Image (cartoon, rainbow, N blue to C red; front, side, top):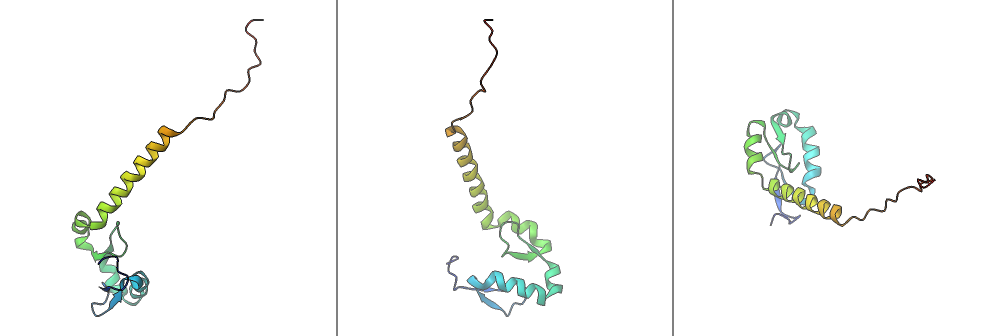
Length: 104
């Protein structure tokens, strides 16, 4: 289960490290400092910062990343919600009082 915080994930910096999913983001920060040479070779996925892939494979990863669809759907949902708010918005603007008298 991808949402289980207890599942073990392999560290991209050291293949011998297996970290609980709930601690994984903290571990990535620590390991990035401990393995700067490996960190230079990895790129971060723009859809999920937990996805670290070899720089040469980043464009392929972006095309196949499961989180890409989730993010795109979230953007669509936000856009639809914004359009709905715009349609339902009632203007409270009132014209300022006019002191001109065209009859005079």
